[in-house]
Image (cartoon, rainbow, N blue to C red):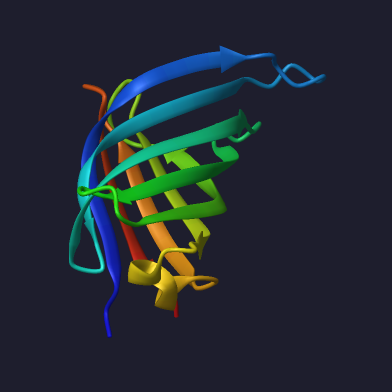
Length: 135
């Protein structure tokens, strides 16, 4: 069975945080929007913190709060990933692995399961996410 979370939202906040002790940049980004999870209409809020690397890539961790549009069920995806710069001034392309946690019966079969994800943050602030059940 193919289980997927997909969404297209917009960045609602990007903040520069305290740099690392060796001067590497650190930033936090939050985005939200509508989407689908396992065939259900949902909304989400995603936040991740990333640390710049000498190669120009980023390593980070993040959380995705997914809620059905009626508010009846929630799930949280937590994970780690890496990003490289895409084509464009501020485009970042992420690849990540996340674990799903929920106490909601509606999403219960996905509790503890791992998802592989891709996230693209575009120059215009648009963010496209896609998570698939792994393996």
